[in-house]
Image (cartoon, rainbow, N blue to C red; front, side, top):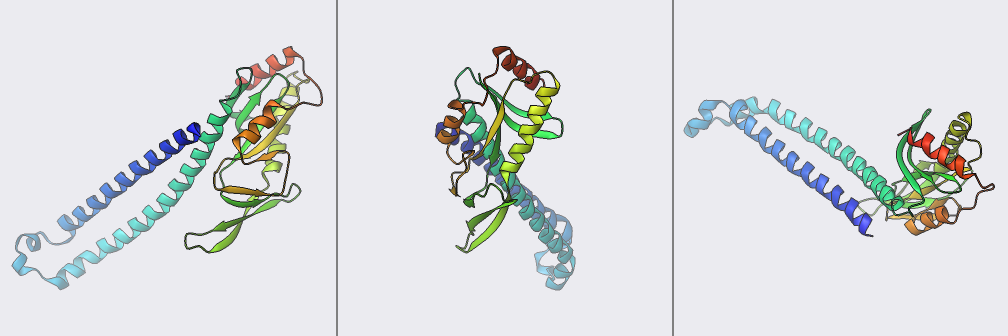
Length: 247
């Protein structure tokens, strides 16, 4: 919980700073309109204020403000989405960092065409961790191309969306890692993985032994994992060296 609080605190700080910048820009736009759009003489001599002239001169500025507001709203939505994804990434990262010292935790690897956020190397296997930040009720279907998500909008209206099956992405990235190691002479290491939904507002419907919505569940899966074949200690060290070079 402390790790989640730390990541959430950073997220809230980023949102607060973004809000301050937005407010500052809004005041700047208003000041610009006051100084340069409305004729200067009408600022000084209020008695000669002409509403029609002001409307004629200010409508381009109002249009500009509307476009800026629309752009700011879109930018905020994109920022908020990116913040949620980053928060989810940080929660997963900080959770994995709590593994025992005999686990090597790597983040943000590039292996071939695959960008892999989290890789764990234990004494008996290599794990690829797929992180998802969605909220709502996620219906797990291992064979389906997309998973259905039930959500509730701000007004309380229920709706559904879809999520590309993360298990398929996991299997593809496992294949990329396994092939990478095998091509470099590291053939004795078993590669597996799991999917972790780190958003606290998610609920999983259905079951898969490789899908988790709790930190304890994911950690238990990793620490109690038994591969189909045990690797040699030299192979594990070789895998560590190869994967560390992919950072």
